[in-house]
Amino acid sequence: MNPPAQIILDTTEAQKPTETQRSFISAVPRGEAKRPFIQRLFTRIAPRYDWFNRLASGGLDQRWRRVAIARGGVRPGQRILDVCAGTGDLALLCAQRQGGSGTVIGLDLNAEMLAHARRKPQGQRLRVGWCRSDAETLPFADGTFDRVVIGFSTRNLNDLPSGLKEMVRVLRPGGRLIILETGRPSHPLVRAGYQLFLLTGARLIGWLLTGRCWPFTYLAKSVQQFLTPAQFTERLQRVATQVEYIPISYGLASLYLATKP
Image (cartoon, rainbow, N blue to C red; front, side, top):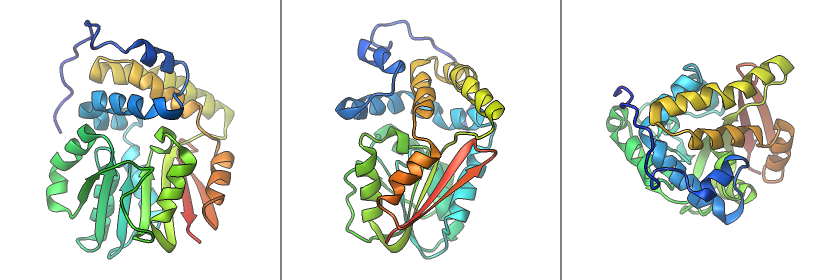
């Protein structure tokens, strides 16, 4: 892994967030304006996204992904789709767990994120196919996959109910949707410390890595404004027969396992 690039602060108007972007910093964007905003955001931070995840999570993010695929029942020989695959960490761990059998496809709409996924050395050794497409209009037939996984991205979907329906649609009957998301710690002191870190430490880490603060301000606020575990579980129950919520690391991460009828 390459070391972080030299910090270059934005000085031109072209590099600074637009007035629309600045307005989104105070609230998570919604509706049709959200998709292009999310695409610009991840295009800007793609080169240092993995570094940000490792540092902001204290190195726990990969452990959380391993817990998710283990608890979700990912096994050799399965057909697996990683939605909003980003730089490919979750898809690659699924392929590693399969040990050379089965099928893994990593799907994302952002070309820069997928480019980084394709260039990873472990991706050259593992069987992973990469697909650029929208998570809310998946280009696969009904019942194609045994497992659908998505990591830290449901809060970035333009239309959450439509995205969940699409992910369940491409699952075979009895298949499982595995959702790993940022958490909401139940202990008030842990929760308060976590919220403070999101708006201070996480933003500082993002700025040091990229020279930009507004993308990480959005990411922090998207975590704060996302559904509670009870609310998200209720959304999942509308499209699945069985939903299990599992807090990880004192609730710093949330795992949801939803079985298709």
